[in-house]
Amino acid sequence: MKTQLLLLTLVSITIAADGQDSIPNGSFEKWNSTTYENPLNYPFTSNETALYDASSSFNVIKTTDAFHGQSAVQVSTLTASFGTYMGYFLNTPAKNGNISLWTGGMPYSEKPTGIRGYYKYNVATADSAMIILVFRKGTNTIGTYQYRIGGIKNTYTLFNMALIPALTETPDSVVFGVVSSDYMKNENGVPGSVLKIDSVSFTGVTNQPLAMNGDFEFWQQNQSPYELDGWNESNNNSKGINRTTDAKTGQYALELTTYLGEENGTPRAQPGNATTGYYDNTCSCTKGGKPYSQQIDTLAFWYKYSPTSNDNAQISLDFRKNGLHIWWEQKALTAATNYQYVEIPFNVWQVPDSMIVQIQSSLWENKATSFVGSVLKIDNLKFKSQLRNTGIYSPRDDLNISISPNPSNAKFYIHSASLDVFSFDIYNVTGAKVYPTTTISNEINLTNSPNGIYLVRIYTGDKIYTKKILKME
Image (cartoon, rainbow, N blue to C red):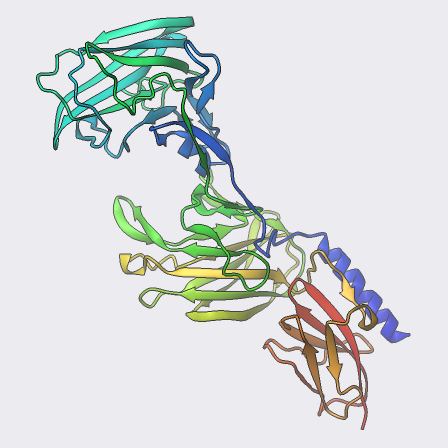
């Protein structure tokens, strides 16, 4: 009877814990990706902003409201949680605010006298769109031009601007770009400014650049990097976070890589960082996390780590009560060529109501660029109190795990042909834990325990199995 009551108690604890998804997607099998389009030959667009901030939207899009053909480009100035951001597309990366220093562009060997096209715009005086041209020959810039087009234009309107001053040399390449707002007047632009542009071409020439795509009929489909479902990237930056097929179980694991970043303009190693919380700039504090109310528990996971220099990865648990920090657990992870199993037991001094998990590929204080390249892979992250997808299995329900000899006078051995046994706990018939283990082992040694019936709680994958054993002389 006591044995049955213990089993019922274990099952009820499992069901209650299962409702708290404190570690969402801890198997790291669920990843999200978005497809989007850029005008062909213009890979550098503000759509990248939407890839790294959940509150922003793609603001360079294909529209069927075209002057000619099937499509035109629409660029917009929008707002997000971080502020206003302008729409733009370019055929070279804008790495420097001084456009005369831009390089690259598309090949072109004629000397135009101007540029023309058709546009719609929706702002009368507060803003205007910008057209950017940079002509180059060899390593030199031979002409830079910026034009404003604006006003309220509800129907397609011709713009036709001369190159003033005129080009004195024939270029070998040209940079072309369009921006939805006047960045020379307002660094962020005016929210709501929308430009539609079509049929762009150079004047005074016999041929247009092959890569111009000035009718914007051709578009390149792109796919955003995969984002980990249920988690946030530190500082809304998914750089250094990837999915990997080098998993302990299942199809994927989480891979975090330390990359070259900067701090106050100085290069530094930046850890790949995944968290269930987020940093709030308004209060300069960490918020979020997931509901969690266990005082005593154990975090379990598998990891591999390839550090550079003498680096360490780290996993941290931030326990909260009414939004305030009450307890902290963290563990540094050292080099491991093969997947290693880790348990982090904890005993919080009071009952929390939420908890934030943070995983990073390097210690934050390891700023030297020599730490760049450290790679952490982690899989099957879970609390031992929490079961996802399954409940506790009785001996007759499961044939994957067995214990023998049973009965035994001292030692028992756990056998599994297809499952990894993480660890196990043993309870007597009163429900007291008499044999906790934090190491991977298949041996149960009850030499110093009295004769009787014991329940073995075996942790493997995302399941917990319960087996009954009998010790007798």
